[in-house]
Amino acid sequence: MEPDFTTSEMYQAHFDPKLYMETYYAGGSGHFFFDGYMQFILKNLCKTFTSGDVKGDLLIDIGSGPTVYQFLSACESFKEIIATDYADQNRKELESWLKEEPGAFDWSEVVKLACELEGDREKWTEKEAKVRRTVKRILKCDVTKSNPLEPLVLPAADCLLTCLCLQAACKDEDTFSCALKNLSSLLKPGGYLVMVGVLASKFYTVGQKKFYVLSVDKKLLKKALPESGFEILQLHTQNHSKAVHLSDYYGHYFIVARKQTNTS
Image (cartoon, rainbow, N blue to C red; front, top):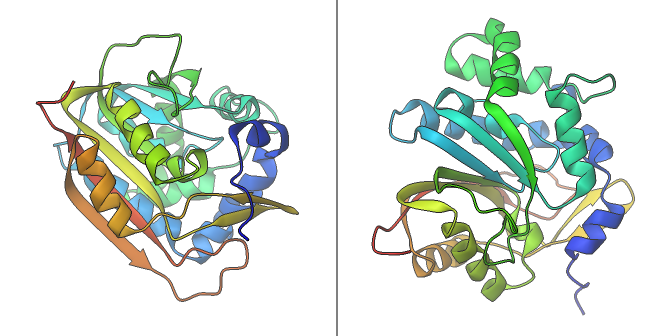
């Protein structure tokens, strides 16, 4: 019998953002460096947001968690970024970094890697400053609601970005597809969805706590996105052969999709 899916309320009660960041992102030695996730994702984000195609006035990041790596290339292509997350403690941690408060997580090694991919590792302090200028708001988000930002109604975004969120927020494939449709309501027709995640994961660990998630594979992605009104433009995957103790995934995926213009 498989363990129960971890609900949003359980994340709110038990998720430790500081320990999560130390475990997965710290100083170039976190788990996501070890398994190649950061290198794969930052490279693809860099290509996507420097191509000249995915740009505009507003990008909304869905399920930001306490992290900032997803903004590092996006801030070059959008005038405004809105960060969102369900858990209060994640939004608080993100705000702490944006305000440069004492004790905020040190993202410098990740920022340096992103800058290196963009051509100049030494511009990392300028990059951090630009992210802080571009991320204008941090909002509560629940992807299971028809308007994930309820009760707010925002102008439709040019791009949605979501990293490692839907697998954590959705208990089954139907909920996953429904969440994609909910996200579509925040996006302009013809706007872009950039989605990042891990393949076939059923859990991940933060400290002594296991969080159980929806297992996602290429078959589900290729089915759910078109059914939710998105045309897949790019789907890149990367497998890894290194032992994974903190989770059970075997690789990573990166998707660029476009909202079809005949959808609402």
